[in-house]
Length: 196
Picture (cartoon, rainbow, N blue to C red):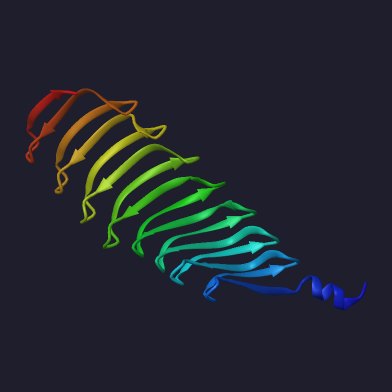
C-alpha cells in the first residue's frame, strides 16, 4: 500500500460552516468525512453554544454546552452514550452536579445556591430519585430529610429549625401525606398535630 494514501486516510481537516453574511455557525474536525475531534457550534449572536468531541462520527469525550456564551452544562460521552460527571450551571454559576452512567443519573445529585453552598442532595438510581433526600439552609445546617421512592416522596419527612431543633414530622405514601403532621416550637414542645 502506498504510504501517502495511508497518511491521507488519517488526515484531519477542519470544515467551517458560515451563514450568508460570513458569520461562523459551526467548525467541525473531520476524518474521512466524519466528525473526529473537536466540533464547535455557535449561536446566532456568534457566542459559543456547544463544544463536542467526536471519534469516528460518534460522540466520545467531553461535551460543553453554553447559553448566551455562559456555561450551561459540562459532561462526557463514551461511544455516543453520556457517562461521567455532569455539571450544571445557571447564568454561568454552578448549580448542580451528578454522576451519569449509561445516560441516566446515578448517585447523589448535588444542588448549589448562587454562593456555591450545597442546598440539596438527592439520590438517583438509573435516572429515578430513590432514597434519602436532604435540603440545607444557606449556612449548611440541615433543613429537611425525606425519602423518595420512584421519584415521589414515600416515607417520613423531618424538618428542622436552623439551630438543629426539630420543627416538623410527617409521613407520605406515594407522594401524598398520610397520618398526622406534628409541628414543634424551637424548644421541642409539640404545638400542633393535624391530620394530613
